[in-house]
Image (spheres, helix red, strand yellow):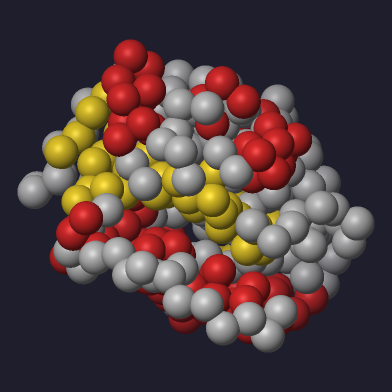
Length: 320
């Protein structure tokens, strides 16, 4: 049996990913998909019935059609909303998301940088430097700040624990009950307003689902503490951009650190680029490393071949 690799990679990304996957799975036959129809590396047609695993990264719509022997779809990305929105992706085939410890640590580093920069007014001092203004602000201690982490999956847990180790009071929120050692956690829609209101900084790491799309709208932004900061490292569709701009313009929120956007790349004319209270990152909070991600994918492939339980399977009813 063979493995189909279907992705929207650039030529440079293909040149990185295919060797990494081949090294992680030396005994497997890897076939690269081109466009919506599966084709071999040399563009020669291959036997679709011989494919039982697909390794994907935002594959073109229809790329997995006709694969009657498919037994596993392994995503190379942590988010799977595009796969779930593609009606051609077979719903009966187990779908595994990427859960890479290296990505978790990278996300924790970015979140810590963002929270520390908000705590110590580093973004404000950067604005002052551009204006040649010498003005000192009162220094806040980490232990006097509450940081809310929304989303307590693997990345959210890594972020919460890293922030707690650095002295912040961390509270966590998720749609369903989750436990995290040393961190106060809350769950369910009824608990969200109190969590938002208690935090000086909110870090969003929620999966994008129908329930979380547009979560940060005018109503929920108004629930946040006056002068709070928002760090969105999850998906751009979580934020209603016009409502966030209004909250920043009014001073209701002090600053937003945004790594993800409704449209990427962020259009050059978008007001986020020049807004004094917005820090823009080009979707780099936790980039996938082909070496570590290939090893995670290979472990699930080996589990399937050996008849062992698969890891990180997506609950399609929950959409993550």
